[in-house]
Every structure is written in C-alpha cells, then in structure tokens.
Image 1 (tube, rainbow, N blue to C red):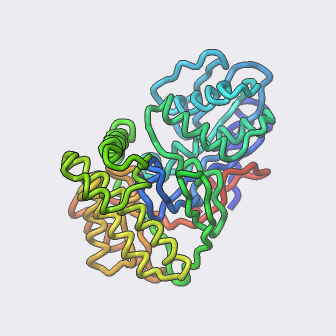
Image 2 (image 1 turned 135 degrees about the vertical axis):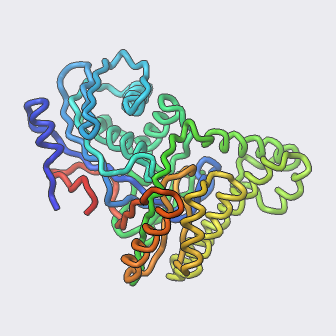
Image 3 (image 1 turned 90 degrees about the horizontal axis):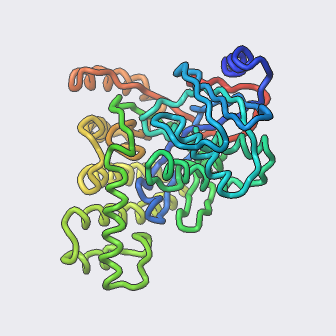
Length: 389
C-alpha cells in the first residue's frame, strides 16, 4: 500500500517536493546485549519504518518537523548544543559528519514514524540511520554504510547518552529482505541467513511498558561487563572483551568478582555461544531447536542480566505453557516487546487468549505486530505505508 502522507505534509509545510527515504526498525532473533561485548547478534530490518521527506535548503540551518508529534526544531550547523528530545539524535548525526570533515549544508526535513517508540524495535537507530543516509546522499559525502552505522552509533553515545552497540544501526542499514544477519560485532562483518519459516511467522507482543535506555540501567550493564573484563584480564592477558571468554575461564575468576558482575558476564558468555549455535540451527531449518534457545536467552536476561520485567516474564511463561515454538524479551530490556516464533494458524487464538489474560493480570491491553523481514535504509520515489502493512 502506497501512502503519501509524509510527502504531502512536507510540500504543505515547505512548499517544495522533497527527496524521500525509508529507514526501517529491526528485530533481533537472538544475541541480546552481546553487540557491545564484541559478540554475535542475529538482527533483521522489519516492515515498520521512518519515512523522511528532505531537501537541501542552501543555508546552514536545519529545519526539522516531527510530523507525528507536531513538533518543529531549527538549529544551525555551527550551533550543535544538544537538547532533551528527539533532536539530540539528529544533532549528533550532523556533529559526527562535521567531525569527519564532510562538507554539508542545512536541510528542510519532515519525518513520520510507524515504529512504536520504546517497544524495543530500535526507533532511535532508524531515526539516526535514516537521517545519516539521507545527508550522505544529498551532500554526496561518499561515506560507506559501515561509516554511517558508526556515525549513528556515535550520535546515540555522545548526544543521547546511551552507550549502545552497533547492532541496531547496522541492521537498519545493511538488512536484506527475507534474510536475517549473523553479525560479528568485533569485525563489523555479517553473513546473510535466508529464512525459511514455512508455516511459521514472527509475532511481537508489546507489553506497553515503556523505557528510555539512557535512564533504565542499560549503561550500567555495559559498565558491569567492562568491570568483569578488567577482572578477567588479571588472569588471562589475552582477554579484550567477553567475546574472548569461555565458561571455564569465567568460573576460574569467579572468586575475584562480585556475584552481580559474575552473573552479568555469565549471561553474555552463554549468549554469544547460543547465538553461534542458533545460526547453525537456522541454516538447517531446526526451528524447534532455535526456539528452545530463544527461551534460554529470555531466562538469562531475566535471572542473570536482570533486564526483564514482570510483564515480559508473564508473556514468556504463557508462551512456554502453551507450547509456542520460541519466545523471549527483545531489545535493551525493561519492557518493550517479546518476540515469538509461532505457527501461522495459531495467531488469532494466541492474540485472543493473551489479550484477555494479560488484561486480567495487568489491567492493560498489549499490542500485537506480525512483522516481515525487509531491506535496509534506501531512497525511494514513492512513500511506503508508514503504518503496519
């Protein structure tokens, strides 16, 4: 379905026809919190997008409208001080271009979003990646997709205060329709894994618990991992990150670290192993085995990494009790969505039962998103539907 909402709004606001860009959100099948530990992850872009309408305005001013929020900001190329809202991300992108010596000017930009904020679908990464991609195209900066991913990551670090890994931006930029990626976050290289979900599909269930990663303990988890690495290096000089650690090495250093640090490191070491095993299972189309690993990941996130919440645990318990193939909390944690690998024919019954029982337990209704694997950020002549297809 084609939707011209964003283009029409831009023309009404700025009086000109824009260039159009699509920037997708992402899911992550397995490999949670491993990206900033130089581990493996398995993300894919999905059919929920930001839509950017944008043009160079031949000045040094950035005039940007968040269409869904009905909010506007303007800032100068030389006046990047940061704010306290979504503009932080965009100022961070411009700042990173400047730091790389890229010549650019101001733009008029209006964007709309079909990615639920705070649901763990990486709306901020899509915003950053899409804006960076558009600036690179408009001003012919010649930056590679990897450089754009690093720029988007820097924007989150320096202007938004979230010390995230590279997975979300990388997925938004590099994804290919119908495939997931096995991304190596040490080398920043990937392998496409075609997905054959005959009779199965991905269903996201939104807890409606909202989070802000820079306020939720996300950075604390990263600091715990770094503290664990520092302890391990006393005994194992070759350790640069938890990617270099196995269970035996971790156990040998257990007495040197607090229980909290040990549990955080234990989860990461096991999750890196699980993700590599999951890639083998996916290649052989062993969805049952893959789903079992998803459950293992969730309970590691809940019990060891301590980033789950009551609502997410409830949904995964329900999935397990009802023999759903796989389920786990997805994203940074502390709310957002669970990702569920389900049989297609069960979707209506699942939605009906979960909606009733979840409301009875928490007095709020969850949202449900059946998602498809899409390609990455790209320029388009038409505007893809910004709502769920």
